Structures are given as C-alpha cells and as structure tokens.
Image (tube, rainbow, N blue to C red; front, side, top):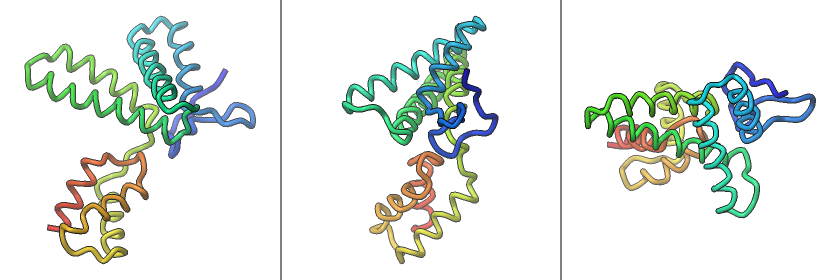
Length: 168
C-alpha cells in the first residue's frame, strides 16, 4: 500500500511506491480506501468528492490529468471551500462553516506548501524588476510572470493584490 510522505509536496507527486511515483489521484484512491477501512465517514466523503472532481475534469479535457492539472482542480475545490466558509460565517451558519473548514483542511493536505508573504513579495519584486514594470498598465504581465514562477503555491487573488500594491 502507498504511504503518504509527511511533508507537503512541491509538485503533484505525493510520494513513491518502489521506484514509481504516486500521483495525487493515486494517493487519493489509496487514502480513500484507508479512510473507509478506518470508518472515518467525513474524510471518506471529502476524498470521494475530490476523486469525482478529478474524474469530471479528466472527462471534460478528454485525457488523463497531469500533476499540474490535478493541482488546479484541487485549488479550485479549496477556493470553493474558502468562499463557502466566508458566506456561511457571514450568514451566521457556523455549523456549515465548520464542515466546510474540515473539508478545506483535508484538501490542503494534497496541496503544496503555500509561499509566505515575504517569499511571494520577493518573487513579485523580482518579476517587476525583470519586466521593468512601473505602472498599472503592466499589471497583467507581472501577474502572469509571478504565477508562472509560483504555480500552485500562491492564489491568484493574493498575487493580484500584492502586485497592485507594489505598482500603485
């Protein structure tokens, strides 16, 4: 059986089984089986939902998902949970917000470690300097350059906010 590495992955590779790497999808399947055997219904439900989202994306694209594509699906699911938590909290539905928070924590175990604000700021400064950006007209190019460097380790909204602050 596959064993998950304790550290968060830098890419979509979760671990290794023998000499073969284990993808996110394979790890989700293995973790779901373990969760079912352990009787943790909530975690099993979240893992089923994630596998379903990956499979739907695979059908939509018409080919097996690469590691990067799988990470994008997981990021989209995490963003949906964060948005739901905000909406439920504002509406006073703490029990629903708590359930979404549990789902988000499960999803986060499959995402790479996010960059700190200082690391992200350094990358933004580096891209701004390399492009010679000085005004808001260059914002799109800067965001594109930053997102190409950080990949799944930073949210687009956070990058956009930081770039806007630095170019203003």
